[in-house]
Length: 273
Image 1: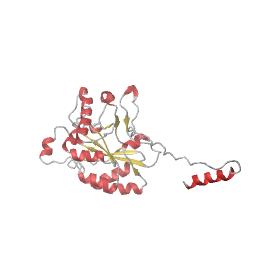
Image 2: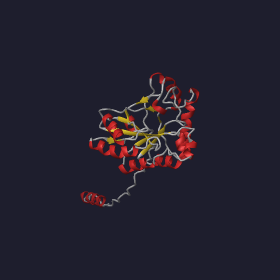
Image 3: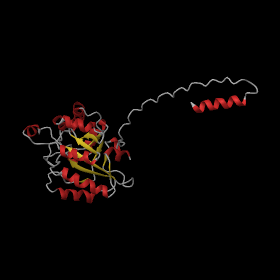
Image 4: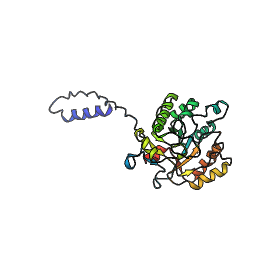
């Protein structure tokens, strides 16, 4: 307002010999408010050869020292009785450690796990520190001879993945990522073709932590430290009964990787870069 008055006064002085100054300041109209932008879709990879589901293993080795910690929240369709008997397929201590250390992470969750622990699934799905991705509904293998897992038939593969997304929505996960991890990491051309209509990117890994059924947290930590490179995807587990050392591994691993200059990111950031 002060600037406007001074400009008007100067104009009056310059034109006083010709006319009387009768300029009236014009009201300043506020700029129209910007239309809120819709959130961008999560990055995915283009289909592979023949239009098959693309497979992502690791990010760029040259775009900074980034690393993605991923955790499989495993529970098969037929383990309900074991959960009812007291076996714990969740790991609240691990999630608390990630939050305390402020480590973003991607959780590959089975639909059956989300049904067993809906409050935890919802909490993870609504916490910006994490992203929830698909690990199938049943945790049955998508190939034969995959670590002794039961198998899902070829004509049921797509339905199994879609059933998991439906379970996430029922649990209150607002936007599960379009990323899929094959149970056991086992896949073949038939499995990739079956999932093409779902539009997911299959996410593997380049660092095996070895935390499944491990009892020596120090050995697991060493294995990860020896394997991590810029852009690495580390596979770990978020199931207390099957991976009892993972919380201790994370608490030891994170400070050491940060000392080495690594920055923790979600899988979506690696894919997007």
